Image 1 (cartoon, one colour):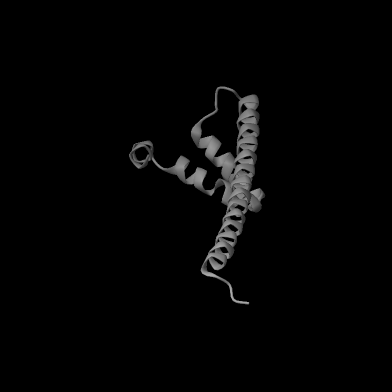
Image 2 (cartoon, helix red, strand yellow):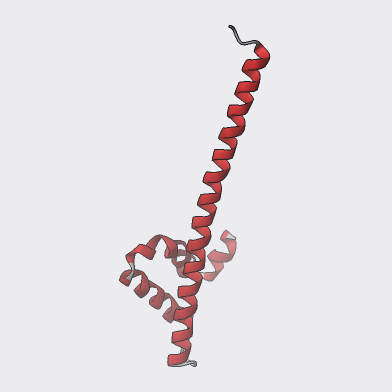
Length: 101
């Protein structure tokens, strides 16, 4: 029994719908991973800033914050990818940072 063009078209449309669902699941998984990495980064940065502020509230500066984040990345290499973009932005001079945005 031969399939009609309409049957072939319907089968292909079902396959397209299944592939679209698969793509959406993959994109959602990637977005969830990025969200988890961003949340982890924010928690660690908050802890670093809090600790620095508790140590000596008058000496907190961007330079010491960057140094502490770099120390964290050195101690926790698994976080390198999470902090790489942030450190690049923090180490970029303010005038060039504004131009890039």
